[in-house]
Length: 327
Ligand SMILES: Nc1ncnc2c1ncn2[C@@H]1O[C@H](COP(=O)(O)OP(=O)(O)O)[C@@H](O)[C@H]1O
Ligand SMILES: O=P(O)(O)OC[C@H]1O[C@](O)(COP(=O)(O)O)[C@@H](O)[C@@H]1O
Ligand SMILES: [Mg+2]
Image (cartoon, rainbow, N blue to C red; front, side, top):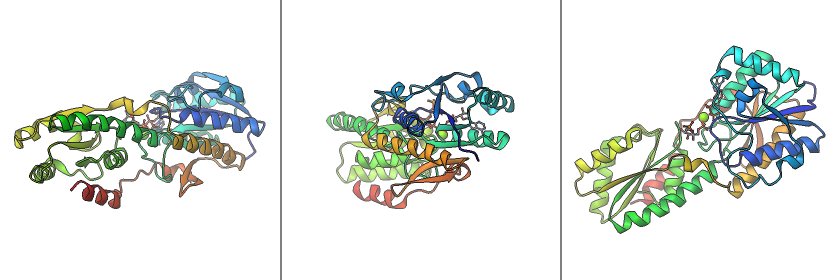
């Protein structure tokens, strides 16, 4: 593949803190290598609509510390159609753009992969999602910040739970992945953690809560991943617990989109900067159809096909730690 001289960058899917830092790194890396850089607004939808703007190194000042994405994001129905992707390709060609950097999650990479297959257009991905549900990278941009947000919120819930001797069910995000629940649950000292990879079920939760009461616990926090079977109806779960363990007074907090906002942590800013630089390096090496990830603190390239495989494997060591420290 010939080295590109004009690169476009977009953010797609659910936004994640650190996406701005990743865009900044791509833009400045392009400037460093004397390449033109075009920002695409609203993800794949902006690609289809030709919503482009030239980005120079000074256009990305003062954004490393900002949550969200100044390029905005979208979940584009049109890009799922061949017609939509054709339109996107013709817009890229008209602008003489020769390669694309997509910052997003598994869906974004699936879309980019289809695009690459159809038009043989060079694309490199950067994992940006709070879910950490991407294979081939130890961390995704935004995950660390989301964990810190969840832990901070649960610390506050703990104060009131303790004052009233209550049980709190706290629902956290993670479409199909329990990473946020498991790690934030350990960090916040949760009593139980319900994750989709385990689906422990209502019965086992009751047994565990019953044991806790007997062991002298007066208040409890249960972290419930939105993807867990029991977690899909968290208010129903609260009712079920109150009906079956009458000694418990239960309250529910759904943290929701709070988890997607806020200033990125230092870890996410550094990760985003490394992956942004890595993505432009990869394109200049002639790589395409790959995601740039981080494994054992080294920047790596992983084929999109690997990245979107998803991993339902649960980290047994983390589960064991969670069980032991909540005794
Ligand atoms: N199989 C696919 N084919 C084409 N485009 C896709 C496909 N899957 C996802 N996309 C595109 O990628 C966008 C982002 O994916 P989504 O799953 O919403 O978020 P994320 O990338 O964060 O996982 C979708 O809105 C859609 O436009
Ligand atoms: O904001 P929306 O579109 O309702 O999506 C909510 C979903 O997006 C996420 O926050 C992030 O997921 P993606 O990175 O796949 O977009 C999930 O945790 C959550 O299930
Ligand atoms: Mg996703």
